[in-house]
Length: 278
Ligand code: SF4
Ligand code: SF4
Image (tube, rainbow, N blue to C red; front, side, top):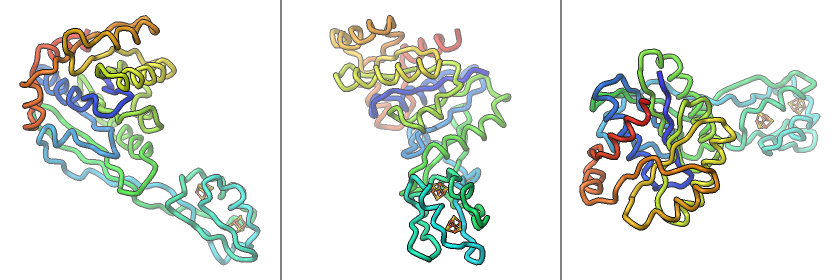
């Protein structure tokens, strides 16, 4: 099994378009699982017209205070860096669930052993299939901040079934935050998708730096390629000694496929598929 992350520092560079098209291309001859790790805004199922089925819910641990044991000492609120516990003189602390990240510091410092674990739902995991591939995706509940926990839960599900696949394509969210790090960690290869704009090039630098720190080998895919417009990317890559590995043209056919929710078919996608097989 080979795990390939499709990522990119900037949103809107076409990561999901590349991830879905690559998964479908590889799926013609191999057993492929596409994992949508953009849990804040998953859309691969929409791009592929795949109907998702609920697999499981994702929970986060949160502290529960036993009023009978609490001595109102205030130690838990002092140690809570998230300000999720607010102490009022001689009263049991007030808990603000939306701020809690489940770190456990409050439970450790409580001298009265008054804190136990409760849980709250923060997301869901879905499964589906279509276009000759299997599909898994995570989705964070609105207003929940800890997307990396849902990404971690999806990875946990993947680890249970990965032996049945030749390729796992992980479509990460944009940026270089914790959820992206969680998605990229341990992948065999990452495809950094960029576009020939100053912002695209700037964010490409950030994601390549992150991939180097994570020790994940990477290739650069230039999307929306037009003759004479790639110089910005070429110049940026000189810093890292890398080259553009594949170029996806800016064409009417590709735009039409995208707008109709059909996986793009292009020689560039075939080339990327051959590249990741090597
Ligand atoms: S688990 Fe961590 S973040 Fe949550 S209330 Fe306790 S100390 Fe604060
Ligand atoms: S540390 Fe324990 S005993 Fe002290 S206020 Fe918090 S819950 Fe109550």
